[in-house]
Structures are given as C-alpha cells and as structure tokens.
Image (cartoon, rainbow, N blue to C red; front, side, top):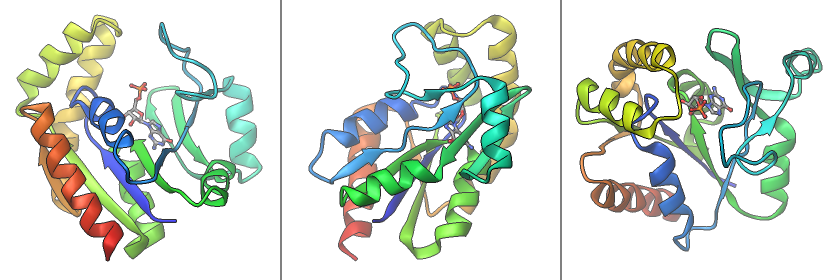
Length: 186
Ligand code: 5GP
C-alpha cells in the first residue's frame, strides 16, 4: 500500500480534485478521517467522516488509536485512525488522504518514500476567500478563521513533494494524476 497525501488550505478545491482522482483507475481508496465537528448537509457518517463526540475522540487519542491527529481549528479535532489504514491495506488498495498541512507533513515524515505529498495551491488568498463564501457552508467567523490560517499555511508548500496550482480544476486533476501515476509505477 502506498499513500497519496493531498493537503491544502481550506477552500483550495482539494475535495473536488480527490473525487475526480478516485474515478481514475489508480486503485485509490479514500481515508475516512474521524472528527468531532457536526456533519454538514449531505455528509454521511462513515462515508465523509467518522463523526465522533469530543469525548469519544479524546478517548481514542488516549487509547493510541490514531496514526496522526490535529486540533485543526479551536476545539475541532480531526485524525486518521490506524483501523482505517488497516481496512484499506487489507483490500490491496492505495490510500488517498484529504488532510490539513500539519497532518500531511506528519504522514510524510512517518511513511517517507511510501508517501507522495501533494500541496494544492489556490491561485490567491482572495480567491480562496471567494470560494469559501460561495460554498456557503461556513459562518463568516469560520471563514475568517480559515482565511487567516491559510495565509500561514501557504508558506509550507515548499515542504511538499509537488505543488499543484488549482486555477482551473481540470488542469489540476491532470497534473495530480500524472504525479500519482509516476509515483505508483516507481
Ligand atoms: P472540513 O471541516 O472542511 O471537512 O476539514 C477541515 C480541515 O481538516 C481540512 O483541511 C481537512 O483536510 C482537515 N482534515 C480532515 N481529516 C483530517 C485528518 O484525519 N487529520 C488531519 N490532520 N486533518 C484532517
């Protein structure tokens, strides 16, 4: 099993790119993270995330059930369960992660050459803010938090294996697919 890590500031278009990549014949399976936030409209437990209570999440940290976890926003915890990676490995698939920058870099450190870390770069912070507003899933306050965090996160792009600028999503998918194929064929 190899690991494909896609990290980006919130709103850079990473989920759209992941969905497109999963339709290709790359044998990629999505790593379903655990988190303690409420599901958004349309999100399903066990499909988009394993939605846990804060108490359950903290218990799993204590039990050492996570490969990695982060408090991505204040009181909002997200993490990759060891059981999730075992599930995907047992199917003989590769795993693709939608994960924040810190988590992505942690996984890369843990898995080294078995992992390809791609940074999805928004064309600009202004464009990122516009996309978050048009998505209309987050409050104004949350959007401001995400924009502030993104500004800092962009400086970590250099620590990833490749940076993919998401100006036109179809082109970003083509670039990501090319890097992934090269990596899986190595
Ligand atoms: P959202 O609330 O928009 O679904 O996700 C917020 C952020 O948490 C995104 O940047 C997403 O990539 C990140 N995230 C999702 N799952 C994980 C995970 O398992 N670990 C870490 N470190 N971040 C995650």
